[in-house]
Length: 238
Image (tube, one colour):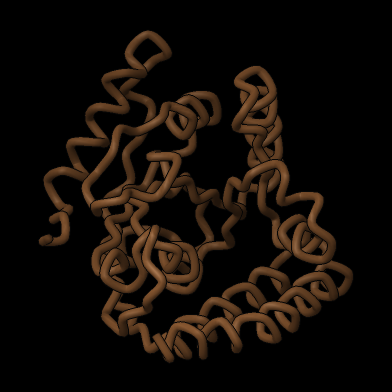
């Protein structure tokens, strides 16, 4: 419990400092590389003070300058800094629309290249996905991270995947890369108020090309990738 509050105390000034450097980085380098590296350093600081170790396997399967749609299982708040630090690609993530309007924080997310989605309005969400597709087509060095379950799992088990990431892959031709995150559930659970020092392991699997699928077979696309997760992910024990 003491560790939990110490992390929270550190988080506030560290996040403010990260926000400043991410926003300034956008002015220095409009392409976003400086802002992205500032975000990675912010992630590393959070992981270090929380006493998390990160192990990454499979980096050789992807091009650090390539463009992918990374999808990962979601069990903990530590999934985001773990992925952000563990991957070398310039990343953007989908965020809730309301975060965009938070002073400084929302501006920093914009500067870092994240995308905002109105999850409560399907029509607007699809419009945003079209915008994301357009941005990705104009920024071939920019990849996207999506948690297709939509929200963190309460028990660490895989949930159903939403179709957004797969529709985006079909629309853009960008391959999907499955990322298996293990250990984060024990680090910090969705409803828990404790942080447990542990090792978070990230397993990067071979890219899955959308070329074998069509809009008519998109459900098979989702199911095939979900099965890949089932084959490689071991849910945490009770």
